[in-house]
Length: 292
Image (cartoon, rainbow, N blue to C red; front, side, top):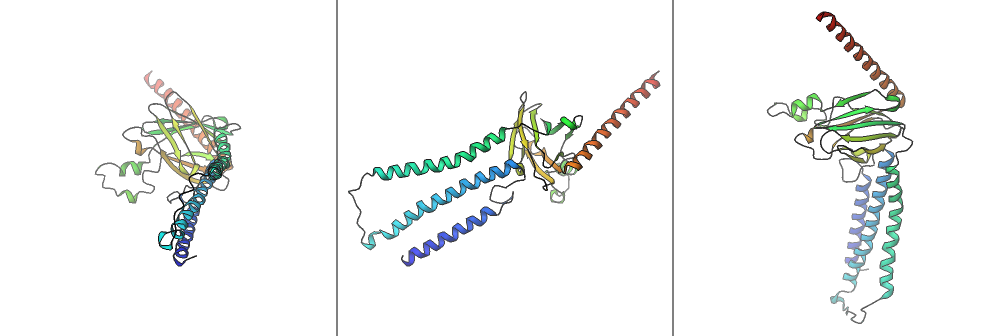
């Protein structure tokens, strides 16, 4: 191999090493698709990386052969073009069969993951998610039935976004990505979301969950998520469908709790709801007595 060929080969290997390092550096604000914290996001990332490395391998073979041919058989080295070879059945079979095999290898796990994405059976918790201009409503079913509330942009972000507010947005924690009441779910639990809308088309999207679904008026879409145990915390997303003037101001925040903490939270929410209902009834009775 000539000195030029060696230098080019070394540069190609260095570039491949850089790409490999960049691919493994996985953050939601980086260059690669985030791994996420759910079963589906991990599967989706695996398929993404499989496709990426197949593309790298094909690029190395194709461009490697092309660069080698340009250097090895250049005119300055006395190379003479062969004008007699105009057809090769063997070559055509090879470059047809190999891509078909690669596509089949990639299609099998992709099809399995697509089927898994649509399988909402055996869900342990169901939550109805309704999009509004411009907020979200969460209504719990199953064991947490009776718990429900609206989730809107937090007061500090809402105040800072106003024209001439005089507030520096960088001074507001999680500016435009915080809400007054986040969606709360347990870790290690298959949670089914039933998505619809009360006005226009919205889309519920949390990047770390690897899933996005449209919320369409008069129609119910389904999706499911299961956050791995040990991944408790806050995860942020947003409406991903242009839905009107305040589209950019209806973020999504999900708080993932341990199953025990989630049960305590549900109990507290139900107790608060009962107290609110009791106070409302008492107020109504008092008003009736006064009017009499």
